[in-house]
Length: 559
Image (tube, rainbow, N blue to C red; front, side, top):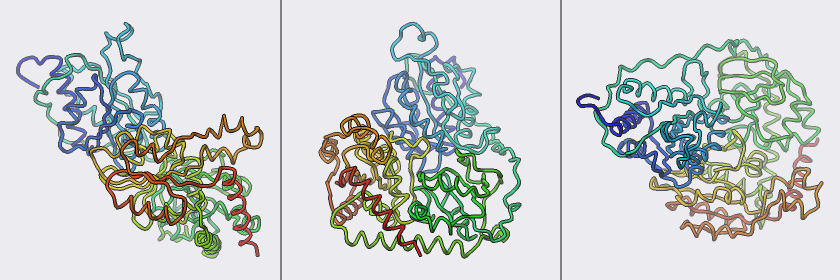
């Protein structure tokens, strides 16, 4: 910035333009914007960059989870731009998810200048450290001034590196960062010449972990059970299996052993499957049966840090190692016969499940999960699995996932899942599996659909008329039916096909497996969002079905 003294409006326009110029240089490609006045300088600066895909969403909460979907599928930070006040507060849920799921988001909130705080000005709340410790970094540079120009590019770089997990002292865990930028009126001005970019400094090196490297762990052909969750890639799982480790994982785990929850309900199999060593990577599966069995076995349990934060709510880990396994590391090779036993048992259950598919004339919740996973595997379309029952049915009853599979497993909430499905599919394709309440909870995501980015998304909605997960919990037995339905079942009478169609999307209702498969195929071959409502038996009947299937499947494992 040079020449005559710039106006305050020109200074903040130049600040916003510099911020996005540097972020684009670092790799930013997606910006999700919710309309608002105070964020005008940021909105104009983002929209001026041809390198960026701009996604405009009316609802900030939906915008945040849409951005989360974009970050999941692109594996790079995504920016979210909102105005001041409750608009910034609406992002709290997605920030919480991004924090615990290690998803890189650049949260850019506009704010009123200091003189408008505490005097009754509209749309003013205290946005300083609004998201607390959930963000990797917080920056509040104040109203832009010309003399601050040399600091603007380093500010953008700090935010990008912190979100990416590459900031000094931040470890290697990506996540959300927050820039709270104050702007004064007039909000519209042309940016002046941007400050020059200094020569790119090398990214700071991550601090070395004070952990022994993995090769110090001598497995000596022991029976190894590897428990994986959020953050563990298909490549890592493949390497683990190459060492004859049995890998069990959550719904997002690609290539892990299918139906482990069913297997661990068999007392005979549990005795044969007792491992000598349990290895933990990333997050945890949803299965309570697995958690109970790990506690009961009490086997030696170690963690590997190479896939990021390792979940250990039961405090079972007694040793920690750095790095990731490779199939060529001979000392890490486990017991081949142990791995073969698990694989054979899993295949036995899968064969029985396939026979149930062939015999079934009507849909049920496990069959819907299996059909959606099969469609993702056949097409390679990324799958987003909703919380509560969908994530469990995929984990328990579906075949091993092959294609990219995502789930908001940081906080495990139903918030914004529809928007996450749309974010993954924007400009490409996605397939989602959610429950009816999850769809209604994020119905505002339907307002924009896939937006101007276009693309294809198929949202399969399991309509069991309420919150299915609660029927598996003690509340269903302890309370009388009316009170349970009022407080937990919470059925809603909305026709979901009509709801989707009212927003201008393709919608259909199905009740058989053939109808579901056909509807998914049709939706994946069409532009835009298609909502497929899958009618299934009552929630009470679903509980009985799960119990029956578990009894029959585990009987197959008895000698």
